[in-house]
Amino acid sequence: MEENLTILRRCSLFAGLSDTQTAALLQSLHPVRRSFSKGEVLLLAGYETQELGVVLCGQIEAEKQTADGVTLTLTRMGPGGIFADILAGSRGAKSPVTVTAATDVTVLLIPYKSLLRSGVPLDAAHAAVLQNLVAAMADKYFALDRRVELLMLHSLREKVLHYLRTEALPAPGGAVRTPYTRAGLAAYLGCERSALCRELSRMRRDGILQIDGRVFRLLPGVPPRQNGRPVRADREENDGM
Image (cartoon, rainbow, N blue to C red; front, side):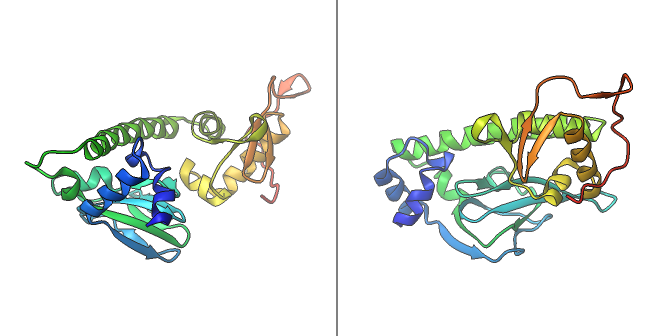
């Protein structure tokens, strides 16, 4: 239980609660702790669920397949992340995404009906959790809006810059980092890995980015020019990334 509480302190669902309140609330919610190996499916597209999930350790990914067979990574989350909250609260809706274990992962599955408790007075801790749940859903709405905005951009360079400026995580020294591998980032941006590697190489050559693995630093100033003209962004170049 103590191990669970350490992780749940970072979970927005239990924000503002003491460990004592969280432990007492969990006893009344009757959650189930489950572990999955890397690659296993936690939730399959087209299926229903009545359970909200909290990631305790490891990472999960939510993916969606387009009509032409392209798999898009919609989100990736680690310890403290909440998934299936909107789906579990719906009236018979089926999951539009498949959730898989990106690494070996352990999750806490909470029955949604335990959260609602129709007709039963709520104590302060339970009321706080429901408020946190509504806030988490609102955050996901705006995250989805940012994703739609990204996918509406026309050029891959615009998508990379938009992602780094709005969604990447802060890193020391003013840089940003992504949890994705190159293949994962390409899937998130909706492009081929090779195309992403070429564009990152061009952006580095044009003086727009410094790149160190998954850490990116946006550089100030105008990209360098050759012969008085901007360096073309559509020139082929392979950097082996």
